[in-house]
Image (cartoon, rainbow, N blue to C red; front, side):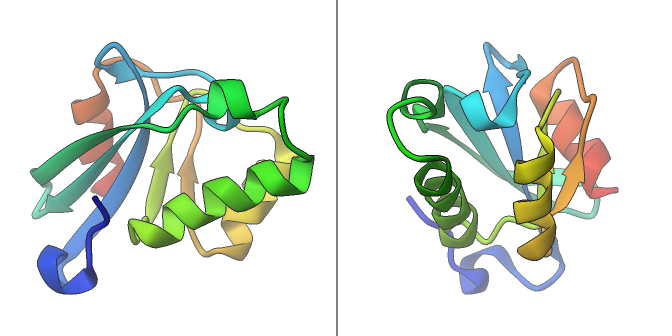
Length: 119
């Protein structure tokens, strides 16, 4: 389910977290699941989890096709910040081009990481 800017509110930051069993996952481009959190005033206002399947699609499509799939997800969900353990340089550049802030080297509980990234 995509969020619209109207449903999130102007003062929220929308954070996507690479999700692995409730913790921050490793490689963004190979994420199996992603959580999308709307953070308002440093607290999570909404949290939705999506089975994105990028772990499987990563090697099934062209490099550009895979990045386009991820870019579409980020746009569809109005993502401001991505939190992950690792991300390759081409993906970091694509997110920079989309004006998405990237938080690398994150670990631990995904909800706490989303709140910290929005601070």
